Image 1 (cartoon, rainbow, N blue to C red):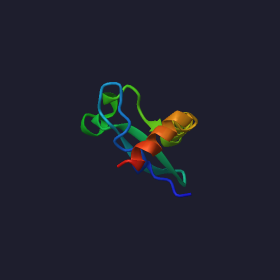
Image 2: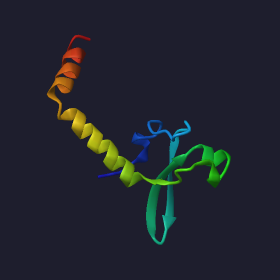
Image 3: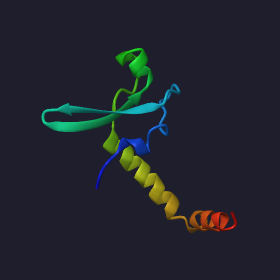
Length: 86
């Protein structure tokens, strides 16, 4: 399955407000994907107290949250019924 960080771009924000941006780099023959606050691009490394966040960790958290939502039949039914009337 192809992976892309574009799916979460603009959805994740740091504790001080700036959005996190995807960043991919090659290291030791591997491609590493991470996210960091956009302020790091403008100000520098010390601008974000969180630092880089591995994309894999964030994707796992998002998938777990989506699973929890989709396991609630009333939420799924409400969204399907709401779309049918549009």
